[in-house]
Image (cartoon, rainbow, N blue to C red; front, side, top):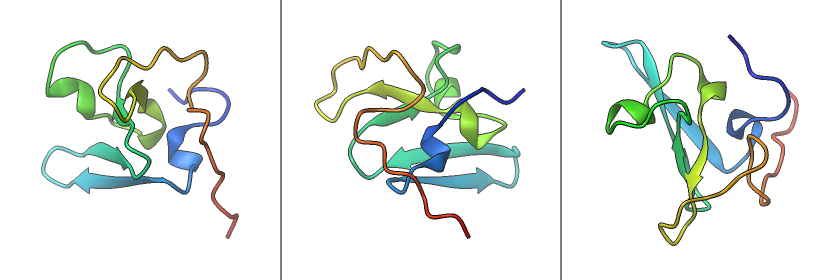
Length: 82
């Protein structure tokens, strides 16, 4: 199920890798945010999703909980369309 709106997967600062064995994605943010599935509360499961757009910022660059009101952070920069 895709989530509506913009996602970290649409941002130039995010990168995703697919684990071919599990078929799940893990994401990183070069701005320092920790990306995770907000519906999963157990590590390490929360850091892996079936679709890239399922990851959102959950911790800020200083390790504090990121209280978000949308699926992206305030430093979001859209990727250029190919």
